[in-house]
Length: 142
Image (cartoon, rainbow, N blue to C red):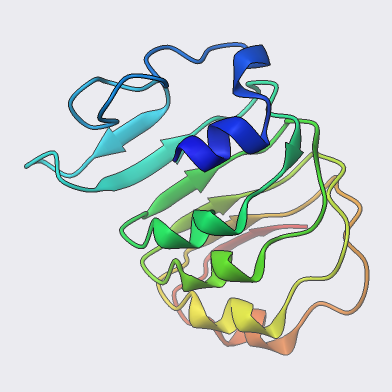
């Protein structure tokens, strides 16, 4: 989690409350929610929070995430391949930014996904058919 903070200029976020304290679950980091025993980060919502820079590949280690929202931030670079390790994701919000690159066919590994927002961005290429094979997907914003 601190990799995300450092890679996206956390000192300049609109709200970075408690992000440099020891434990995201016990210290109530802004935009972070954890499972009831406060063991795993399951929800990360940093939309409209002035995150700048490239998403670190370590984001893929947050394997308990079910909700991940970073829309409306000046992010750049491409989606790290490790993001597709987040197989418990139900909601993914990566819209309205300056990220580039393509959407990987590995998106098909996000089998629990019901909502995805990737619109208003600079992604290029063909939308992978694997996206349309996600049987839980009910809402797409491209």
